[in-house]
Image (cartoon, rainbow, N blue to C red; front, top):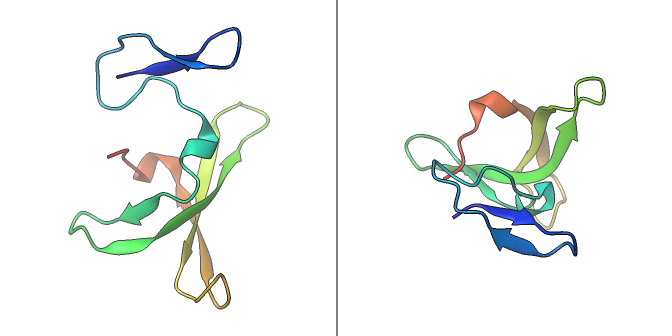
Length: 85
């Protein structure tokens, strides 16, 4: 299903067909797990960085390791390197 926001900010199904929704709120990806092609857990999405000149997603900040955010390492992952599952 593909969801877009209506005039009131509610998500509505637009019937878009394809891999993943056509549009989605960036905040719905924060905290999602990142896995490699072998399904090994690499980390979690901490932030989505926008290129303000082009309006496109520049990269995703992924956090890995640590306990309760202490000692975790941050990595910049190019948006094009990710696939929505």
